[in-house]
Image (cartoon, rainbow, N blue to C red; front, side):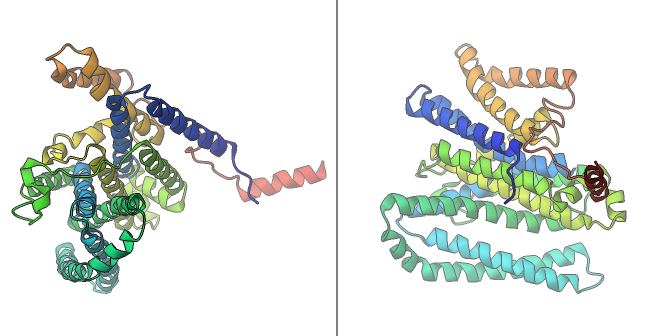
Length: 416
């Protein structure tokens, strides 16, 4: 049986203490609803920023599209739970589920077919993907509508709260899955661009998503989203327990990913793309997989956010707000998971909490002046960010000793 590392034990104990302390303070009403909501938003922003840190901090792709995928996940999850609680139907769940499954299968099949065609340019490959995926979505909608009633009846056999929690958790995961699949399709033509051009293209994506959400009730036909008026009637199901679970799993996943061969390849591209290519690393593949994983985390965080206040508005996902996770990643330190999580909670507690209370009445907007000044001072004093490249021992890479060195040490012990 493999012995558990001390750093892992300390991390688990520390995480458990954080959860218990916050949960106890909230249960005993020592912290009011305002501060509890701030902590929930901080956890959501931490997940979004970790996804961006994976794309930008570890892989070196300057992206401003994180809020676009954040919005996709939020509205996807919200529509599923809205239909379940308000319309008492699992149609949203079944339709989105089959869209996610059939789209994933289609992408894999088309990818194998495209890889066998020599000399196929990027735009032609993108057109093939798009055409087949749209056909798969059409089939998924019909199939989802067909099985909606049986699934609804099956879920109604369970206790109401249990069924609601099942729909909620699946909705969050599906929100991340849809965001990831959209990022794959959108990434096909733009991942070949240079860093600056890639950032502009992703910023354009955020603007496109925001415009579509403004007209979701007219252009897209989702009357329940109410377009620019904002979506209401979303159940408030996100609490500290769910935020903690998803954030904990995200940190563990990123830690294990970075300490794997995939993670080494991802980081090597950031360090020197040309050298990585010369060493046989499939640069387009690792850029794509990093972009997709980061977008999945953003979509999942969006699903959590949608169920915090029970209200969504397109202005929440504007291109100006898309700079928030970028600022957090830079503030915490590029390529630092510890710094990103710490900066996310600091961002929420200071900007949305402390400054709102400290500034005089009528001057709340001045927090958007104070916050950049604090960030500017931080960048002047410590340009590498709050934590730089520092990581807590659990996340820090643990490199095993070389075989020759280990054998030599073993022989020395035997001689002694």
